[in-house]
Length: 545
Image 1 (spheres, rainbow, N blue to C red):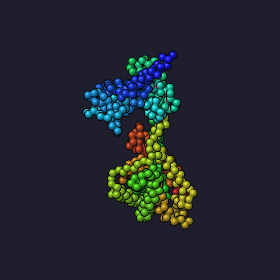
Image 2: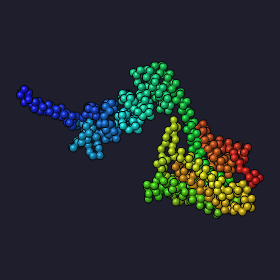
Image 3: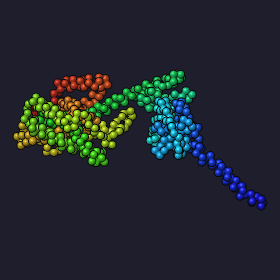
């Protein structure tokens, strides 16, 4: 009994000593234990062989570990920061704070001289993308997991299959889980040793995705695949192609609505001046151009003086563009146009001359080159609806065009100015006999139309080049919209703009942009032969006489 008591401290000391010996390998710099206890030093050493094949094999092996250290190595290789010592075959990572060991992450106090970067070709880059995707499949951030699933879908790396299946089992976010299942299906399609039932289910899953990548995947089915799989792939391709045709038409309709909103903004001011005053204003496009340059000036001032206000630059530019171009319009009407009423040919030539003067003035001040107008953060980017891509700037311009339309409609229907404008439009002589100062109404109407053209320029600056020739691309289309919809009728302008916009974009895939516009012009010429007043003709004694 006494002997056992005396030996107990000795036994405890031996146990403690043996435990410390067991910890030595884990604490040593050369241990290179990855997260979870897996040693990646042997894998990392392959990068020092300076062989594309060995580098690719190392990336595949790293992606299977799932460790944080492996992710750091892959990121370093992608960024060109992974280097090795040709003499000792040691692999390191360059970091902002110095050189660290690639396998352990331990800082290297005295790095060797003559370190060489690990080289990469296209095959290695694809392997990097696949490895990075596999290593982030289990990331805590759902967005990163979705990006990783997309990367695996593109690479179709069979080595990532086990990681993808493990991620599917753990995934709780439906959208990310669907992306992971599509990545798994992309791998199984080309995996010859996979069960036929699983490959058939994978073909159906890829066909349900319904995009262009799906067609490429289905066509990549190995030539020696069973006939049943080939038939399923052919049926899937036919289904996807039919689906893409539908979405292509929907995309063109969206582009047409976008173009229609642009035409509405450009033509709505012209509809007022042309309808009230009967003036063919060839300088209307230059009012649009001046509005765009107003946006450019506002953004330049904000960039230099108050950068934090940049997201508000368009809101600041809108009233300034309306006031500036409105005043320019009133000046043109008072100095040129009022002397030419009742002489349409002279008015056309005079306003064309004014347009040339304005273009040259802008060239002299800002130069002939395009000017940069940035997009606020809330107008940047896009989102998907099925296979339909919708950009935020186009969506906001459609909303803005409709807001301008209904605001102008409210002015014309609910304000004294609108009442006078409608009276002069329907019967100028009777309005003058009732005491309405038609000359003043003409000036205000021309200013209103020019101001609306100016705010149209603010919107167009987000989707078109801001240059002295900006307005020339819209003046002819604006007249087509006004004539087709009905001179002076705002509802006709709305319907005409969206109709011509959608028709133009639907014709382009078959006839081309130029021939499609020619066909629309021929259609409008034939249409006004039957309905000279357009879709929605104004009513009034003077108008009908």
